[in-house]
Image 1 (cartoon, protein in one colour):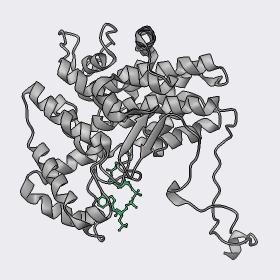
Image 2 (tube, protein in one colour):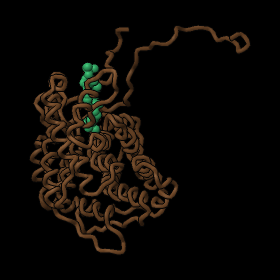
Image 3 (cartoon, helix red, strand yellow):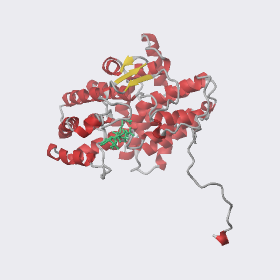
Image 4 (tube, protein in one colour):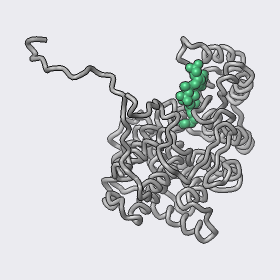
Length: 391
Ligand code: CMC
């Protein structure tokens, strides 16, 4: 039928107007509200980038202090929400817990259902950004059988998250500045990425007027998949499986073989047909974290050599497949001490800012309508019902 544009995977459909994030995939450019990701990752903080994405401009000192104060005030979880965790098996994937717990937030904040009120939208947005570290850290603590840590609001957003993850109530936890900086940078690199699958999911869920906690839970569910946020976990698992540089050619050959479903995880991107600018920063950060922690990991060598070999192989050159944000992030997160299962939860934590900012932008748009794609029907033509005895 000629009535609709058929665009599976939405490779050529713009679903909305947005003033948040600009990507030039051919050139490998990523801007948030006009600012290059490299500059933000180097000089800004995750809280500042969050403010920028939500409000459109960088904050001045007072605005940033106020914002951090507001976020800090919402870091605690309702005590009954903490009990929610007990319903999960200890071996539950943290993303399963995140979907459930974030979705359940709507049951605690009834003001979130009136999304026409900008003040309600604002407080829900702040709650989500503030509680995500507490929720993610608690999922980790639950999986290893340690008590959940209460937030310490004297710390930075990221320092507090590290303490809730790696600290224990019995001991002081010392935040290592270089690790805090690296973690904060990883959050910046994941904060937003225009209309990717999970963000589009949040917008589509939100277009029906659903409350923001439900919408973000939908985004978390979408992010979980290995083609999207799950790639950071899959990438490190792949690098560990390769193990030593001499085995790289075997994996490159598999990735090129059309009869083998295997793909190089952390490689390729729907939009970037050039080096992902986030991967550049990520690669640099690996070295910084290794230096700060005085550790190293043979898997980094495997990653570097895999990258070099792939970028010199006609298959990857012709298809314009480059390392993406997920290729090196796992190496850093693992050095900091996170188990691979937590990687995608960290992505969700950071992307919450982008989801929330995009959701707000959509709801504030007077022309906003429910998202309702059409289809090309391929089923049977009309036919008469046949009673069961005659089938
Ligand atoms: N390894 C080997 N071949 C690949 C890879 C890869 N990682 N990625 C794409 N290709 C090939 C693919 O087989 C196809 O070949 P052909 O044209 O001969 O059929 C061609 O390149 C285009 O791939 P596609 O699947 O049509 O591209 P897409 O835009 O639908 O998918 C992608 C993009 C990111 C899902 C894909 O590149 C992929 O699966 N990469 C591995 C998973 C990954 O790293 N995902 C993280 C993406 S960035 C962060 C995020 O979004 O969360």
